[in-house]
Image 1 (cartoon, rainbow, N blue to C red):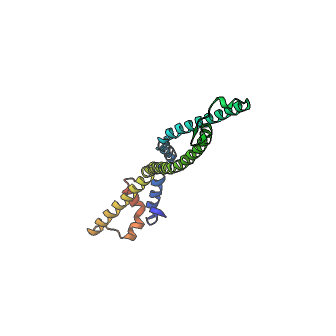
Image 2 (image 1 turned 135 degrees about the horizontal axis):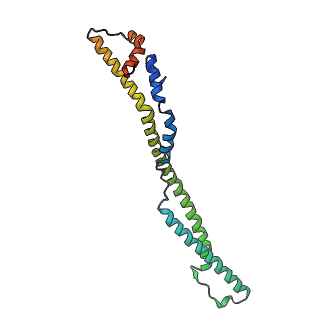
Image 3 (image 1 turned 90 degrees about the horizontal axis):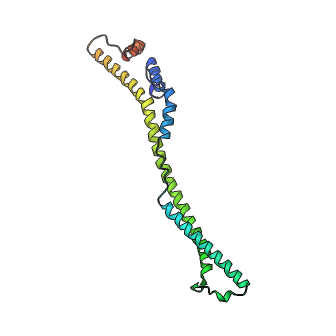
Length: 192
């Protein structure tokens, strides 16, 4: 099957040997390729702004809660009228701080969750592209290039045999090439 499927017997074996020649090195090189990939793990710039807004809203909620607690104690002591409570549009400021801070915090949380989901998907795709590129580079260098070199040697040998057959020399038919292929395989690779 694969690239060796229609090659004569020794060439199919040579192709398989070329594909697995770096098998011992492959796992280590893949580990290094994956470890060196840019996974785009940096924090988005908007996180600082979001963190700052969360801190501001938390302070507003705490200030509103403490203010309301103090007003409650003053009311219990029946000195509530001594400290005037400012209002905004008829609502007491401590209540606006407490309730408004909670609502704004929930909205900010929802927006951050949506933005994180979109950003995480984009970063995951970029990390996947980086990983694929590095793994494909290792596969090309350690598996595909040696296989392509063997296929090129086979192609050169076939071309040389065709030229020899065309000159009226001791050319071999395709059938003769297949029968003579053990010797041809060793000669085509420069071996004996």
